Image 1 (cartoon, one colour):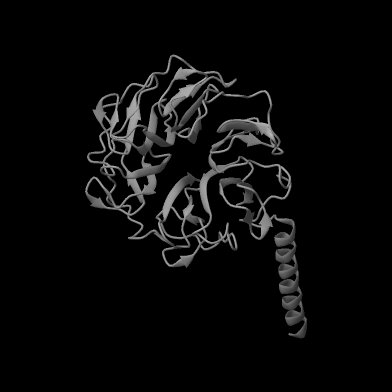
Image 2 (cartoon, one colour):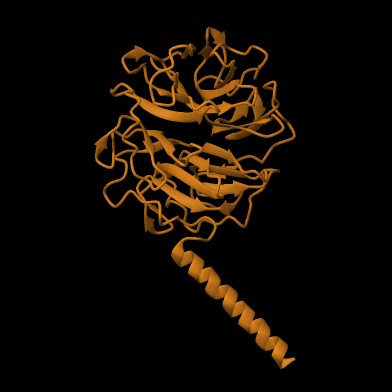
Length: 352
């Protein structure tokens, strides 16, 4: 009996030691990957709003910044796998007070969909949505018009279906002249897919910040809204492939119990069906989570994913973008200076 007790104590001590070691070296789920680092003072000089990881491990980064590692790059850049700038990629997005990149999506052929708040790329008129060739030059064959009641439409989210159609989310009221509130679907050439009908969508001037596609064709929509097609949904909803609301997916009122004005800015779907949500919140369904959390496929909180303190107080920091890497890690981008008490300027990588 004493031998058994001794073995149990030894096993518990070993498990505790391994857990502590994982927290120190950053290998535990939710902890920062210390090998990905642009260096103190040499990161991005502005907020990261969008991330996309290429098959070769390079990462596209979009946001409010104008410099990366001290090199001039306006709102869109490409990083190598170690976090340093890929100097060969320069999209030449125009500069100005109203120019930002909010969304990025890679097509299988290497072309890049770019959404945001801009009116030109490389000197050519493009409002809110464009497609780039793999080298960063503008694809002039992709033509679409996203408009709103204000001077600039905002495209915050992009998702690519297996059939090549493109889901677009944001703050807009018209797409190619047709009424679409917050979300629409385009054909591969940029024309509107009229078979996708979300009804009243998120309503007038409500935001869709994230669109993610499940393997069964259903669509997850995250943002800052209170209703979808006149049904109560706070910040997170799921749609059928034709755009109609899936009434059986309801994570409950106040999925993100917020500090100040809260919202969900990113929804990423893991291969196991779990959802990683990033945004501005301090708890999810009553459980403490700072700006990033993981949900099970049914919408409940995954208790195993605990990124300790996350990015910090929700009123000061937020996670705008989450991207899954093939090696089971997560890239997160947003407005923050630390993750898990370690210095990280607006971009970090977590184990999952």
